[in-house]
Length: 67
Picture 1 (cartoon, rainbow, N blue to C red):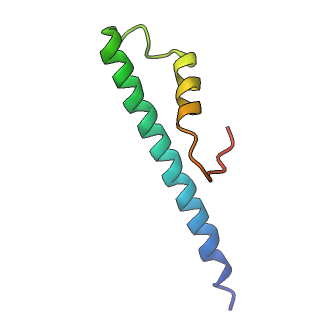
Picture 2 (cartoon, helix red, strand yellow; picture 1 turned 180 degrees about the vertical axis):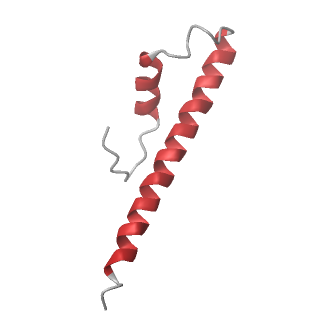
Picture 3 (cartoon, one colour; picture 1 turned 90 degrees about the vertical axis):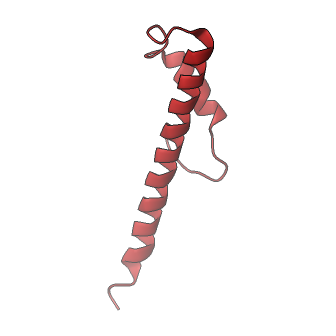
């Protein structure tokens, strides 16, 4: 019965990676939306303030992603 403990671990890994991808995708979507509103894509691409605000907005309930 040595093969039983591994599946829940891999499920957790897959779920965390799925949540991370979902969070990154939402960040990019919000970033594009902000760029479209301001009309300047060069000046806000590397802004750390925008990403911190996005991370606060996208905090998923029940997710245990350490940053």
